Length: 204
Image 1 (cartoon, rainbow, N blue to C red):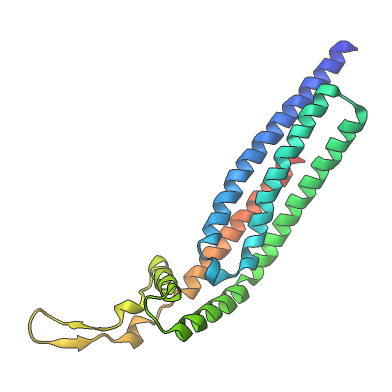
Image 2: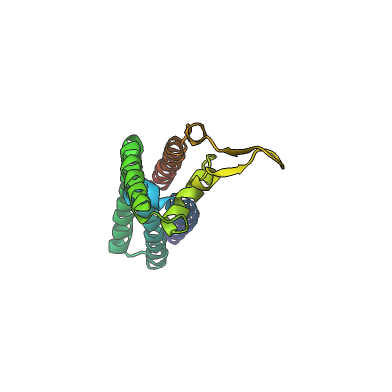
């Protein structure tokens, strides 16, 4: 009987250790994905970041549940064991909900990006200052997404001597940054969704 109890105790301790390790990994993954979305927060809208924020919070909560489970395994009180099981079930359920939420946002992210970019562009136009934070952020977005900033549209020498020219901005801006940003955001959201799904499957 004592041997059976010890085996059960070590089994529970091992499970909680693995549970805590998965939480640490999830904390790092969700934090990294949240950062990649946060970089473009001015253009994608804060709603897009919520699934990643929830996943990061669940990683922290999972560490707490693992600690409770570790303490429970030492005492082996029936009530505490049941409580830990319920908490683990809730963590898994919320993580699966995070997967669903991320996929819903993934499906409608183009609307959020369009609205956010339009609002930000209007603000940048109202400021009408190429050195304002809004204009700098807008230029940086174009550069990071493989396009060109507004500062590239201007006058300059065609050669070193006699032929000045004016850049053809109508040609220069045929490819914008909305589509690359849209693809980038969908990719990050898909990674958030997969991380939440894998975590919920492994932890249940």
